[in-house]
View (cartoon, rainbow, N blue to C red):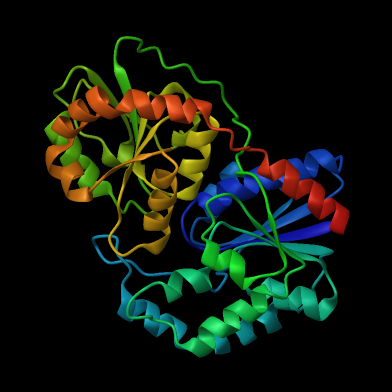
Length: 358
């Protein structure tokens, strides 16, 4: 069978998520499925992380613009989506030329659901938030009601939508064609061992687009002299210090999560999922006007599975905050994270369900 996987052009989370799902589908089908992945902005990363038969470099019609501070750039978003429905129709016409696939997976692109419905091919959407929800939570809303309705109606055409824990209730209520699944976590490819037993090890994770880069550099300059802590960061964010370990571009930061005492960073869903899977406590940084990030922090904090640091505090007072946090809050959080019972076999559950449907 042939499957086409559509990845939105935002961030790395969907790439990691689909790596896990595709690996499970290959395993459970005895490698009887040929996969094609289509994406553009992070094409090289997708090609490096996911082993499939074919890649197509093509923009999949979903993007959101950011200001220098990382908050949504509403005028640019509004400008792009003012022509969305026309662009969507043109995108569909091109996709229908020489169509050769038995089923489609989307994470999270809307047009495949319409294409599948039109051609009577099964379609599966995988995400923890939908773009219609994301854009409708911005103020003032950059997309008009007609475009939001267009997105929702297309998603309703999916054979099945898969939502993991902490998906916003507002999204779940919009759709009847959904299945709740466990957290989606990939199989770790490398068994790393960090030999640093006498330090409190902290992995700092940014977004794929480097939204927190300036904040991370500023925070480390104010904190890296504290010899009780050892900071592990991407080479994009490194500063010169004996107390900062730089991880190179070809290293995947999430491979280090299980070796850390604490994860500090942006509340992206894959970071959350893997930290919960490896039971490593999280100190999450808020992000201005980003409904996804703020919802993730709110939902996790509500059940006692993360702590929160405001961005301003992270930049200007990270060292003092860390000392107080470790002394007064960390070990209570560690116990809760160690004892949680949230399942993390979402990729396996999704793969089995897809195979039943096709």
